Image 1 (cartoon, rainbow, N blue to C red):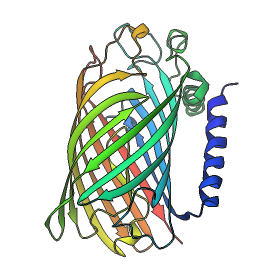
Image 2: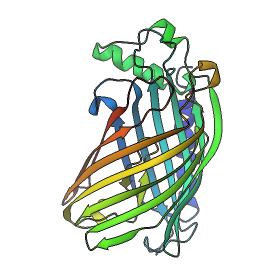
Image 3: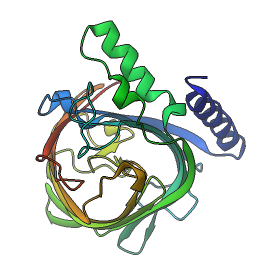
Length: 307
């Protein structure tokens, strides 16, 4: 079945949503971020496309600014496709084509001045995710280049991996409208990485209490920016440096080695007016594997409306 992992993921998400609701948590809202290199450098390659989303649930009466472990939970989902620079022909020095679906249960909480998050994820990797086939069908429908046989026959292998993620941040209010947020993060599963970085926020909206970090770009996106202010603007800058131990997207049999370190630089702008919120941002991605021809620019968008 072309989409077996996708069906399993949707069923798992449905069961998890029902289970969380039955434990007494109250649904707060959702967030979503769409990222694609066609919105950035426009070259349809490498970290070519992803969608991140989360649904947040909280215990009744909880203050989002003073959370204890377990007071709030996030049901996260992430869909991602990586691709070589040329979909129509295999290049021995390029990364293989592959897709992954990730589902996670995470809890954001505070420990003194620290903002923390801890959780676990399951990753469905390979052709069974149906994501490379979805990209193939989408390209066919749009009349643009499709993957050649040599690329399709050398995809990332099917694998199911259990992993997790942890983040620690220390927000610092520099002025009433400027906040710095240095952080450290570790992820295991799809990729085993450790990173340190900082995010800066400028504007009347401020960084809202309920935000989740996109694993590809590092952008933090909110569950509901209406909680911050009825209208306003938020400008964000971010940078992080990552040590990479392993990557399922770059297996040893692909004969392409991952770079031991990589970096990301990002900027974004959120506009909020009444029930409407729009975010747009760019991320400059450092080289991820040996022989990569250059860096990559990704574009991310988010549109939210509550009627």
